[in-house]
Picture 1: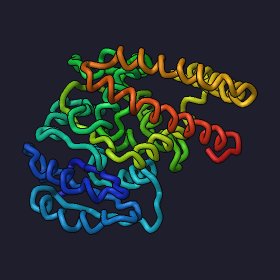
Picture 2: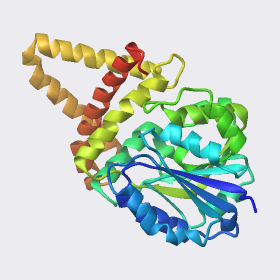
Picture 3: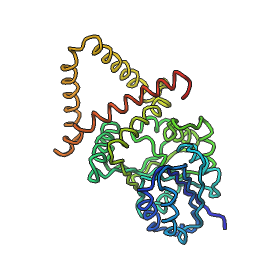
Picture 4: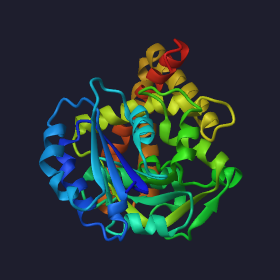
Length: 331
């Protein structure tokens, strides 16, 4: 029997998350599990990801149609791996999950029951899990506005309505017809710094309306270490530049203003060092106001005051890296 659905999971240095991810798949409540093949792409990890996959895969062997494991000989990146998985898939529709995503136990069944060819689930962050989760939760309140963390009705988005809908992204929480995905993913170059989530969904909504659901939910587990968070946020900069450096995109004007302001500030501090102290006081005042606005309790305020400056500095550095890559035609 040919499986009707394919689940694609790209894993890189994901050893600590394999157990929880596979356990969330093992407890799925659905009548179609035996019609789902799982395609796992191990992206040449430097940790024990492959060993952990082999150790825990028995949890899934008897529940799903089959498990296909692809071992990359070189690190290819998420966008490449998702397309690779899609080309190997035999299902007519695809699910995508990432190492840090934990789907609810009715995830597959609820996505299918929506009866749409493209569905994006509701990605949530449990801010009680760690300080970094709390900071990520609050940061998304700034980016997405009041809809973040609030209940909303399922909404069917066409190309025009998607452009103004605040909750963007969701490539790691999508259910999509395979032909649509393969067509959309061929519209842009695949490289490690590609903003694949934004680009793929922007191309998909040109092909077919997308249903954004309040349910089912996926819990996203933020990174918890200082170094890995700084590294991850820094690497988001080039991805941001890859898409939003184009005029008419949502964040083009804020991007231009932000780069201009940060460059002017840096030059001013070099030329007039005495501006450093008042400049720092102004910046911290702005952080305090933003933190007070988005915080839901005292712990939120304290966490955001400590972590928001780190997020900002790492992201700005990444944006400048992205600009360099763009100017040298490496992006």
